[in-house]
Structure formats: structure tokens, C-alpha cells
Image (tube, helix red, strand yellow):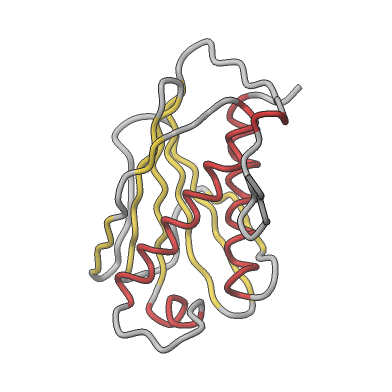
Length: 168
């Protein structure tokens, strides 16, 4: 049986892979890293929480990667990176549904600057290096879980996957 953190990290990596495949055309190589080594100038952050989980997701990258993930010319890179973080959080939320987790999402916040580095004040922090032929970014997941949480799959709780058709 997988531990809660392993289940949540696997779901996060799958959500990241789905996002990059949608906009980058290929599944990325996603590696858990100890430290952030890349130098980035754009970061989008979005929070999510319910009774059992508090989390934040941050995407940190550069302008070329943001432009490369868009299918149209971009007037505002900051807004597009915020939208990508929103889509990643939505994909992650959908993957958490089978465990009975239904976190609410905050509005994404995007910041720009030189040599941005992230940290978290509480919980466990996981940083993933995400690379594919069209670009790279770092995806950070900060997690705080309710003590005693026992994640069990219940596929009856599953929500629609991104891009699938659900008829009501």
C-alpha cells in the first residue's frame, strides 16, 4: 500500500505530464529534485484546500517556455502562466477526487523578477524538474495533510478527466 504522500505526488506528476502533453505535444521527463538550480523569471502560484488537505502549486519558468506552450501569439505572458497553473491545479484536483478529496482552488497569482526561488512556511515541499524538447519548468507542490488521513481509492467518486466528454 502506498503512503499518502506517494499517492499525492504520483497524482501530481501525472497532472504535470498531462498538462505538458496537452500544450507541449509530448510527455515530459519529470524528476523530483533536492534544490532548484534553474534560473527563472516567471512564477505562478495557486492554492488549494479542503478539510484534509492544504496545498500550493507553483510553476516557475522563463518567457520562452511560456511562449512555447501557447498555440497563439501572447500579449501577456503573466496571464498565460497563471492560466497554466490554474489548469494544472484543476487536473490535480480531478485526480484527487477518487480519494474523496475536493479541494477548492484559489485564484492564481503570477510574479516576475530575476532569479526567483520559492519556499514554503509549512508542510512538506516537493520540487520537480520538468523537461521536454520544447522547454522546461519547475513545479513545486507544498502539502499539509490532516493527521490520520487514510487515502482509499473509490472510482465512483472520479470526476471527468481534462478533455473527456461527460454527458449529464
